[in-house]
Image (cartoon, rainbow, N blue to C red; front, side):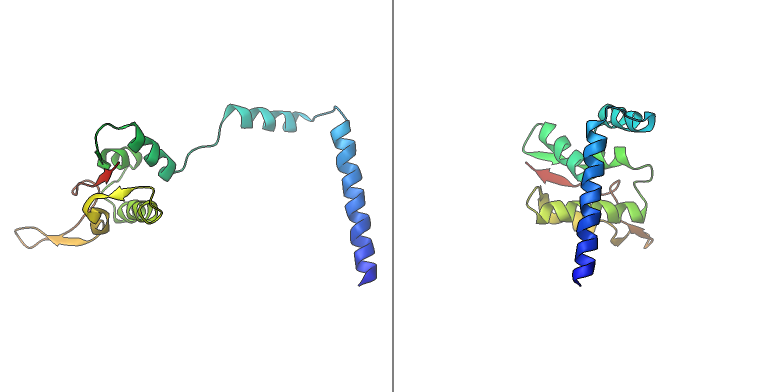
Length: 134
């Protein structure tokens, strides 16, 4: 055990010395220079939840219809997988008290309903209105 600890300490010391040498040297490789520039040029992208919260904060009124926001994000807003994703985002934000979904309509996303002819359909962001209280 003592031998492993000594080897680990020696490797750690070597690594620290190497880091110091690199920091002291003014030579930066082209790939490193490119990576630094690329990171500065492209700031971190917001998550869907962060984008949604920003969208809500910019809207006027006490209630915000969130359907248009989600419809603009997804190419197939009627897809069951899209409905599940939207529902998960809304449930998480609602549970964390970041938003309050009016009448908990988000729980209906992906659920089945029947039209007057008895044909089954699924609720999605295109056929159910979801409002967020500010």
